[in-house]
Image (cartoon, rainbow, N blue to C red; front, side, top):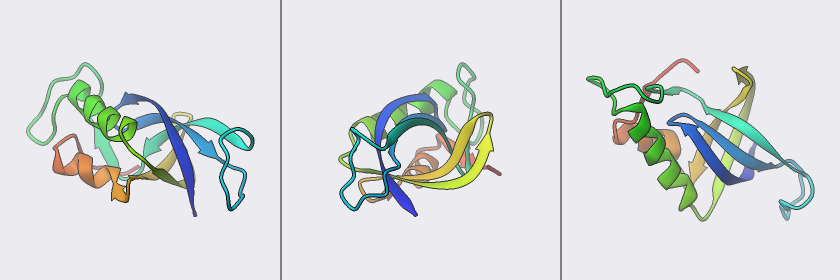
Amino acid sequence: MCVLAEYRRAHDGDSYSLLIDTSGDSTPSFDEGAETRWIRLRDYSAIELGKPADAERCSGNDARLLADTALSNAEEILVELKGSYSFRRHLAWVWFDGRSLGKLLLERRAVRHGRR
């Protein structure tokens, strides 16, 4: 099940702070029934911050900038929580304005397919 979210900030290319609507209402509200969660993008892996680009991916700082730009300019963000955790982050798939964030970052060489 997908839930609406509001973007707060990117930690790096594959980890983000999002305000998640947990109310379950048909009309979402970010006033009540919402909580901020750290999200780890499922199935994709970015280079860590401060690390240079490699043969597959851009630098960690560039990956963060790409994710930040996509999410901060999004009209709508949807998150599908997968119920697992990775370093205190919820694993999830993220969509913005109908696009998969993971696929966009993959196209831009910001991430590679990973295990999480």
